[in-house]
Length: 282
Image (cartoon, rainbow, N blue to C red; front, top):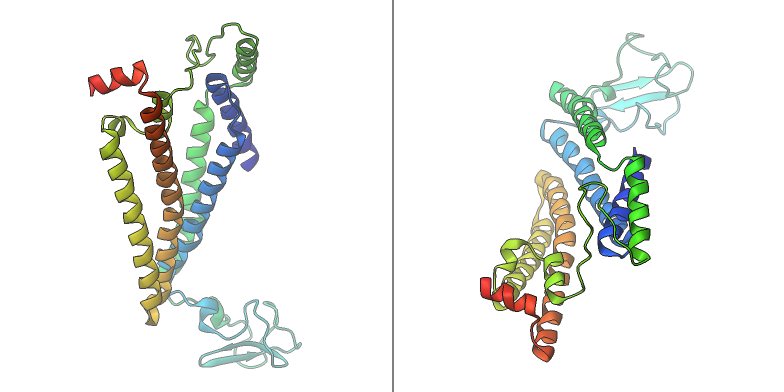
């Protein structure tokens, strides 16, 4: 699956180079890696939180057994209210117990709650199946075929040689925008943000950064002050929120830096005709 995603990402990078004239492998690869890590954090924490909330106990509450080796000789499992010894001195799953019913189940495999089993089934099979179907749907409607990719590379070479090119996906002529402050704004800000003045946009970005910083401090304080059985849930949820902040803070900080640089450049040389037209419309 990752091979397919990396191949699609390479196609997207080539398509982006057709319209921008620049190769941005680093930006796309970092974005993909960060997104994967964020999903892995959520995928690794949320199921455990849900299972713990409905009564999951690690190894069924037993000190050893069910894959965890026991220190004592001939002991197969050691659980509250039940200790099992094996006849052959092994702690494997098929070792018959020395006392009690020969075929009885080891307590460490019993969670005591069917909800734990259903959560495992939901995440392992149902959710995984839904995600697989979505991936198959995305691959089905993916527009960059082998022929389209070849046409993208040919169009990029044509533009590099000073000729003209047509976008293989849209059928429209490719027009690369000249580097300008207005183009830089469109690359970093949404249409709603572009409708704001530079002063209000700076204020908004600065306020968001302060909000993210305050949220980060509050999360750390909550994690440090938590205790008892709820601590593991608070720490896990806090880790998920912090991972999101690690994306939001650099993004808004980078946009604020771009805005400040453009403001200084505009004061030095004055706004371009396109920027004057945008200001007049706003």
